[in-house]
Image (cartoon, rainbow over all chains, first blue to last red):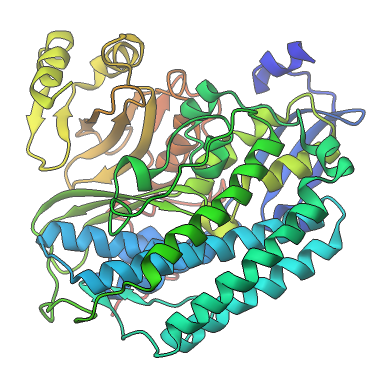
Amino acid sequence: MKEIINLPVSKIEEEEYHINMGPQHPSTHGVLRLVVSLQGEMVKSLKPHCGYIHRGIEKMCEKDTYPQLIHLTDRIDYLSAHINNHAVCLLVEKALEIEVPERVKYIRTIMDELARIQSHQLWWSSFGMDLGGLTCFFYGLRDREMILDIWEETTGSRFLQSYNCPGGVMQDLHPNFQKRVHAFIKTFKKKIKDYDRILSGNVIFEQRSQGVGMLSKEDAISYGVTGPSGRGSGWSCDIRKNEPYSMYGQVQFNEVLRYGCDTYSRYMVRMQEMHESMNIIEQLIDNIPAGDYSAKMKAVIKLPAGEYYQKVESARGELGLYVVSDGNKTPYRMKFRTPSFSNLSVLDHISRGMKIADLVAIGASLDLVIPDIDR
Amino acid sequence: MDNETLKARILSIVPDAQTEENKQYLTLVVPAAELHNLAEKLKNTQELSFDFLFCLSGVDYGKQLAVVYHLNSTTHKHAVVLKVKTDDRVNPAFDTVCDIWRTADFHERETYDMFGIRFNNHPDLRRIFLDEEWKGYPLRKDYVDEVNIVEF
């Protein structure tokens, strides 16, 4: 098994048994095709084929003004829509040297953490389903509904909110917001115990995830595997801690690290992160200061010529925004360094020598979102 | 290591590198021939140890095509941006860095796909998002597509 892991793709013999996983396959969670070379049931290598839903968002961004861009970044990683928007806003505000009101920082941080929780809930649902536990899917989606309802009330949309805008947020919080967030946290703290009972401590689940898909810390750094997947290998890569933005520098929370390097560690990091996110929300929700929900912005936003970079921690890892501006109202070049794209690149490396059923578990533990890869 | 020391260290490896103004990161334009050598030293020297390539992007500056490398050290927490530029728009090519940082593999394929910049010694340089038969490189500024791009 060790020999296979060390072989480069091109050196592996031609006469193997290939199967296509995807583009329509439930465990790829979207339109991604994995061409898997097998020896019996064992994965020798795999090649991801992306681009089935490539929409050219980077090209489209070159034609759009900064406030218009918000609606495209929603659609990159739709489960971290708030966080992606947050990144654009931070970048514009940094370039124009605008200080946003305290209230905005609170709102954005709370919304980001709600986004992280609902993203992890959906990840947990599909992880369970991929390993054959269909109940997980119902549990996860049932609880996620509460967050979508909260968003619907305040932002007017359940999924792609486009709530952040340069300078602040689109509209003020709904009067029920705090009450409903409290209700959600109270309910979910009870429900998350069920999550642990049904999967985390389950013997079958443990056997299918422990020691599967080993990713060392060095490889995680080299492949750029960030977010919960990188932290499952003991790499402290949380942007919220390393380069704090909005309220993250002022709240108490732990960066969740696990050192098992396997699928189980990556799973446990996300489970623990949901607790940490609730912890962050609880610290902020009762103290939201009064004030404006947006700074005063010019009608036409033009970034001074130059190059800017902004990092945020999305639910999947480090999202980077690289903008080259020539002083116009549209970016000259906009690049998204999306976490799923880098996380996908490691899939070949960590699934070699594993069984094909393990590949499903490994893929789920990386939490890939396909539009985030294709853009 | 602060930016001044870092700059001095890099200039001692590549004397021809030129600094570019940037408020956020130390930015250096490096001659293409020196890139691989410098990258290797940045990764493997203990005081520098730039082990994390967090972004690799292609940029079309009009006359020139460029590749931008955003590097970070997970131990020392310092960062640097390297740029390589070329005037050749027909056959632009740089050395690959995917033997140094594995994440460059996919990012270089994407840059090839969108800008047509080739990377020498890359193990698997194919288009990553578009079809193999696709004509042209969409993110270049002189790309024309009358069917798919609607001009307003």
